[in-house]
Amino acid sequence: MDWRERIVSDPLTMVGKPVVRGTRLTVEHLIEQLANGWSETDLLEAYPGLGREDLQACYAYVAETLRDVRVYPIPA
Image 1 (cartoon, one colour):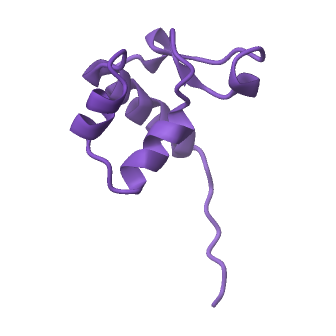
Image 2 (cartoon, one colour):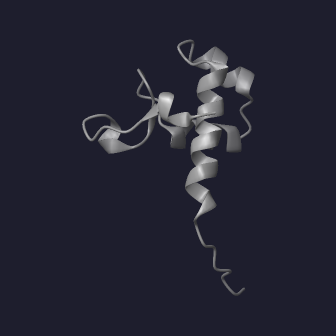
């Protein structure tokens, strides 16, 4: 999936955070809701303008963004 068709960033919308095109739903918010236990169905019901393809674009965006991130373990 080419997330660029569905995820956009504009400094005038949500301070430039990546959002689903045509909405003010940030990728961060949607992923955070999933991390908090929401299901895809919950998100699609809560945000009727959102489609399953939009969620897949969010996943693809996050995967590509994290691909080049280096993680350094923090000693306990």
